[in-house]
Image 1 (cartoon, rainbow, N blue to C red):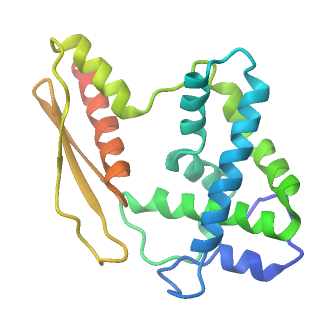
Image 2: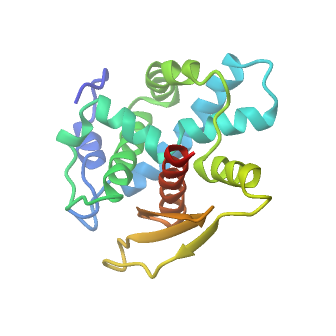
Length: 211
């Protein structure tokens, strides 16, 4: 892993790298819980400083993008976290979810190892380039799809169909089908929200090619 941080307590690192599919009791879920909060506050502060003229709504959209599963998974891949993370079998929509959880757990572990300032410094270093690149506050895929469809479909709204979850009860996989403008697309994820966002992204790509 390429993370520029040396743990004083290596057990925290080992725990952060252990997914529940490997060890149901001693895993990174509690560290993920902490890391999610540390990341959220740090990114909020970063954006507050970086965009002094942004209204609350724009800050919120930027924040949602920067703490999303996709962004966390992107950071994890850049750090080669997937080569060190001990996980169960990752398939389809679960890959980014597992990587994102692992990244949050690492941040939580740094917080417990050295405190908030150390974790925030790491987050600022990793997230600042992405925050700067988002000159226009991004919209999530569902919002973008709704606006696209309403503009080109006489005010119609996308229709989401939620399938029965599959897989183990403690680790389900959700499938969502979204339809609009005579086209449909499917998304798979570890939650209904993640699956619906993926479905919206896929349908946007289809409609963009079509139109």
